Length: 366
Image (cartoon, rainbow, N blue to C red; front, side, top):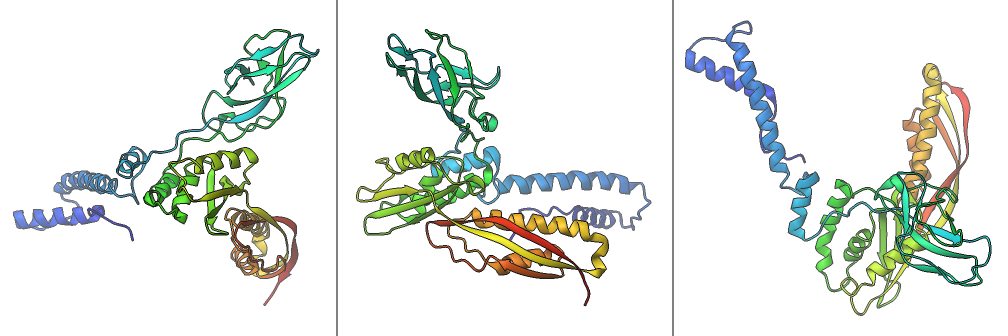
């Protein structure tokens, strides 16, 4: 239910002003009267004020607050919006010939893609005498998604001089850079944050703390496989599976002494993937013959959306009847879903689908 603190319909203020004018003057006010122009201006200003008052009042409510007002409201709960995160990768520093002595790679050594995108090492490392290479984690200087997506070999311009003609290159695709936490995700964490006061390790508390570990974490499932044990499974944005680095980040966060109850043994996993294929046939009604191309595009789109939606939630079942209804809603007259069959996804698993075939069978009549 939408809450309104003021009446925001301009017609309400227009009618009230006309009634007041006619009551005071004792005469009927017609649409062509000059006084209507003045009342229209007052109506406009009154409507703007009403909208502003309504919006301002809503900024005190968690369901409606946004931006800096949501940040201020979160202070009552003792939490803050997660800042933008820096993209990370792994760099290889190497020489053509074995080092004659130890070569120190200082923490903060910079390697660039270009003048704007620069990565720097997060720790010191050493190419030992007699060896030719060492591997170091690095992060982008600029927080946000700007540092994501550079494939192996693209970060190769060493900005800091090193002895013995040391070269550097990334060996993994850059990832995990995120923009500042958006309002909707922050709002959800605020609601969950009350659970963090539990000292019994509640399910919602573990979900809250897991989502607080990184902005990319989108879906979390928590259950206890045995007394004293807690299993945490999570997915990243758009259903992406976490890699070992992200799993380790969450594991460290959840095992902090201020987070984990003393008696809990916490295990963190990526969900197990359950694969399935989509194969279907469909017909379009003759009356929609002029829209065949648009309907075909819509059906291809809803099938992709079905696959994405099932892969975004841990434990979400694969329901062929849902796929059937989506294709029907996209404009198909008759639909034959060959696969998947109904798949019940248990705890700790996620469904990931691929398209085998989407076949248009032609026009059909009643």
